[in-house]
Length: 375
Ligand SMILES: CC(C)(COP(=O)(O)OP(=O)(O)OC[C@H]1O[C@@H](n2cnc3c(N)ncnc32)[C@H](O)[C@@H]1OP(=O)(O)O)[C@@H](O)C(=O)NCCC(=O)NCCSC(=O)CCS(=O)O
Picture 1 (cartoon, protein in one colour):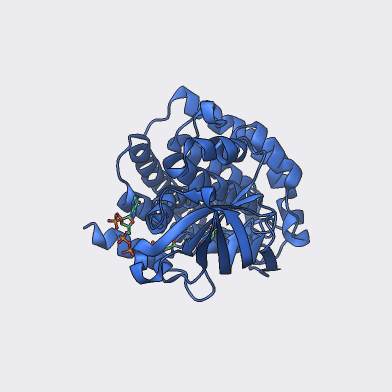
Picture 2 (cartoon, rainbow, N blue to C red):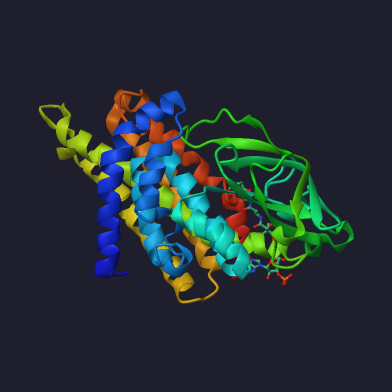
């Protein structure tokens, strides 16, 4: 896919920001588990919180191809920051665009798209991730309110978010059709951050377990209709998977660029290691794999922009990009030799950061299941 001039401009602006404000800090944030509050505000000013949200609703008014470009660039700077931005765009803002009513759009989507608020998506639970319909959190109607009880697991921005989209059972007997989606401000009594995960990577992004303890919200916070929640969640994940794929490409690219630069610098047997064909071929494979993933992502994103269903294409992009990214990051370590295994060079951190792309917003096996269904 050939990018438009507008796309080039967005990519260049985000690349400049990410290389100047994220990449130089990423190693420190990794060590200190630092949440990049200040840089997120700068990203908000660049329109990164609601890239595909119309300007009239507070967003940047761009498209999903642009969102993929934005996420690739942010991820090339810092993986954890890209996850925070990715979740805020999709599923949070994308669900709001598709299913929120006008009042909710004004009240919640606008600040989320502007970056005045940060969003989280609460679907996964301790006992169920892939089998999303098996969730146990309940939302019981009580007069003009719903009262939510349950536990959510692995929630990106669970601690720092202002607003969460929460999936809960409103009618157990109805199975998948008994799940509903709600807006829950995280300041609501009963929204409890039970703990933060100690993760392998992406330390700049918080991943929380959230308890809902008699968390009472007004009935008007229901998104769409009662029983529509499962469909809402799955449709939000469609765009989310394009975003995760773009993050994987960004991280793989950062590792590849580090390896290329190292290979031109480091000498063995009397010449830069780049001049050894074994190293050149490894780098050529890495560059090709990254480009192939990028094209799958742009294809899925352009289908979404055209209003076409793209569940299969989004799943293919996420599957290919996330698996490719682990291989490429591993190869980047190999090019660095022993230096790749220690934290003096960025590839050790990026390898840890990228691994989760094969897991969150649907494991590789779930992507294969979705692809197989569409064959
Ligand atoms: C494993 C699954 C794929 C199983 O899915 P199902 O077979 O149970 O679902 P379906 O019957 O196919 O669909 C139900 C319903 O939704 C509609 N649907 C599905 N996809 C879309 C879409 N893309 N757009 C619009 N509508 C859609 C479908 O038509 C059905 O509607 P009707 O009943 O026909 O009206 C699934 O469970 C799955 O994907 N599992 C993985 C879940 C996952 O990715 N979890 C990770 C979430 S991330 C998280 O929670 C951590 C927080 S983070 O910070 O992100």
